[in-house]
Image (cartoon, rainbow, N blue to C red; front, side, top):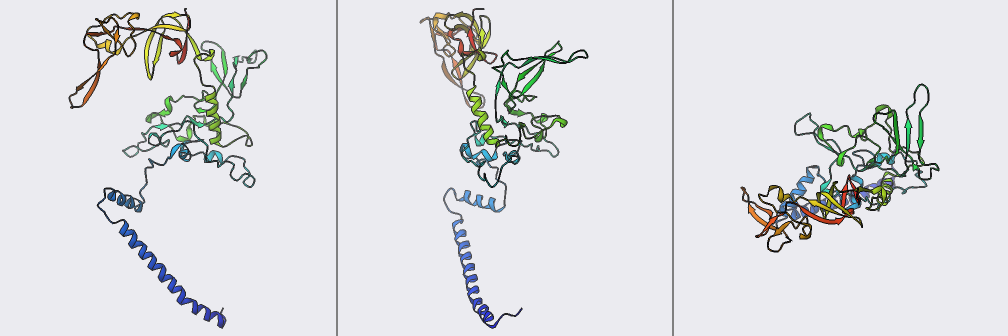
Length: 402
């Protein structure tokens, strides 16, 4: 369609202006590129080479390994595996029943902390990586402690003792106390009683991998390279029983996976074991093998005597005594300890060890603990300490005569 006469004159009049604007933009871009080139020109400063390397790497679009992608506790949340390995929780949160008009930012709270963060340089990726040789998948997998958190943790009660059903009678279970006042749980785990036709139902924590419901258990969260499965198979479920997301709840009862983790972590801290309650202690009597905690060192010990006031006498064999040519008997009154196990013949009591520097075959200095001159290493150390500083079977000791 032909333009009116006035429109033609207007378009002709605007053409020089558009040309000037384009020319000015090109000139500005050229000056900017010159300035950038001047700024990136090699200089004599020590960091000039590093700046150029970073620019070249970015220009080649090389993938950053991401060692510094975390910045504090909150910075690592988007990169953490939650709900499923390799996912930040977005897939699980996509199943939430959310009204996008009434709750636009309900699950975008940026100040939610992970109470058990991992330092950026200590992180292990959860995805399976290839080995140096083609066709091999021999990298380990790390399963986070709260990969599938329990939003409503409640594990209290004695559970049930059951008998399996037979052709004559159905299964019978006896659960909890008479009034069931202490039974508060959602999930139960069945465990067969060896040698019988019975099994138990115990309250279980369905948190994966921190809870006690899922099996097999993963020690420390690390899966050996040869034992790794597809990341989608954690936790391991039969194909016909596979459900996700975990744990199961109605759509309107589910909350964001990060919020569920925070609630689960707070609950776990409120129920951490102490050294005095019945469920967290175990009787320790003379002759029991225990683990003694001395500061940040755990030592194998043996209980010799038990005293009133939850005190015990233990015996510790120093490591230096295992390789020593000569040892000496050290009585309890000598005041020996796990760090003071050198008996002085002149003073008749134990003295501290000393550090001795030597040089190995590679010329590197090494430090050894030796007894001072005029003293000998104790054959064993006898010491009285509180029983709650000892552990047996992972629980704190409670002194018991028998």
